Length: 359
Image (tube, rainbow, N blue to C red):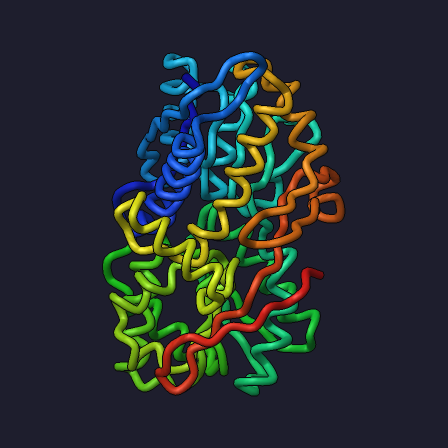
């Protein structure tokens, strides 16, 4: 039996992230099992998924790593937030776990942790191209960035602030306490910036939906962005499409593409939840991990599997040709990148997508 661990926030405002990660892991496992299992040396293994709810905290991720270690889990898809990755890396390192993490922290990948990979690129890769494209559609000339005041929020907000500035757009950055229930003071501060576009960076989907709704009620007429992970369905559910009005976001995939639409149906049948751009964008990374395990011929030697994973060409049957990135930002070329899209909601109409190239 090949155990694949998955962990992230399965409850709370950021649960959309964790449930998507769990769903992607279950989908990849079911896909492999339906094909007969994963061939490892002279035997074939069925894949079992083990989940853990981190609560979107560093301590939760560390506890998850310890839980996985006690169960003999060697391969993990997750965790998600920067604080989660920070909390889990040392514990996973001691247990020789191979992580396919998705945290966007400034130190998410480090040379001293060779078993940590990125299952998808961070905003350093895609924020710049998306801002450039969105500017042609919405014509904004000033920006504000808001995110929780912890590592998971700050590290992404700092990158996005820089990407706006690099394109000559004045930007103001603000923070708020994670777990906030009363957003009225935050909304007042954002209104006072008079920014043409407000980017919510990696703020939890529930928080984003609430702030968007209250900003519209307060009379805000500008555009919104979410350049810190894709949770558009949940944001729309909370805010309502009319409040979203003009909104752009990072989407790992073009959800209108026939291949992606077919994958979404398969995903929903297995995961039992609606597919999102981010959940489908994680599928190729999970597939690549299983290929590496098979090529390495072991379910115990994670260093050997990591070596096989680094050599993978990242060619995916659904998303096409991927590339390895990460060297420029982290000094480690262990970040998986496939073609990505900008999703655009204009005049409260359904999303349209355009594929962009990484910086």
